[in-house]
Amino acid sequence: MRGKSPRKTKRRPQASAEPPAPKIEPVQLAGDVDAIRKHIRSFLQTKDQNGNAIGSSAFGIYAFYDYDGEPIYVGKTYEGLSSRIGRHLTNQRTDAVAMNVLDPFEVAEIRVWPLDFTRLPEKEGRESLSQAEYTVFQKLLRESKLNAVLNEKPPARTAIFKLPKDYRGRIIPDEIYPNRKHPDIRIARRANTIASLARVISERKVSKGLRKTLLTQARRLEKLAAERLKDFAGAHDEESEIE
Image 1 (tube, rainbow, N blue to C red):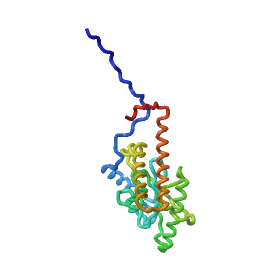
Image 2: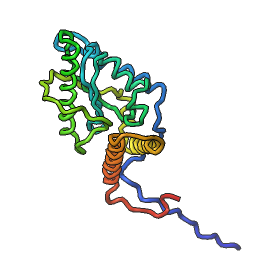
Image 3: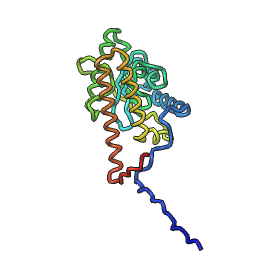
Image 4: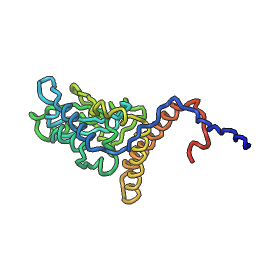
């Protein structure tokens, strides 16, 4: 009579307390884009102190923040806040997006400073707008943990401008926010942006500012990856984890 062979048991890998990354690709899905556009429009319809939609202001300064509340980009407009922000974030190409300086996927919040220079001569209005941009830019550098944003060209130094009331809001719907905020998704996306920006730099003559932007993006990636690694502190490293 043949004896039964001893039953082999599979060793179970040590479980990590950290949940795995969501099973999605770091791409823009059509449904997500439509939902985000709706939230952007809703935010820009916010009423200011005079009862006007903030997006209807012809002049203004705007800033974008990522999912950690880190400021990442500052801009100005004299052609309308709504149209300018829309060009950045709704697949209408701008210089910043085309050069892979700014990835719209990274933008979780918008902050705007509507300005009314309609009664000023054009030259004076644009000078005041530049002063406001410089003031906001310096303010956001102080807010940044890296003391840096992604602008290729920082605004020229000017006098400090007395800023009006600002308005800030999240543009990512609740049903999309958790997946987009997940650090593994953001790390993958950010690494891809860096590769694209580096390719642009390698293929053409570019400014020193664009190289500084590449460095800032690399520092942002390093910071996010380091913070993600802390989530696995004390977890057992298995050599067979990646085959």
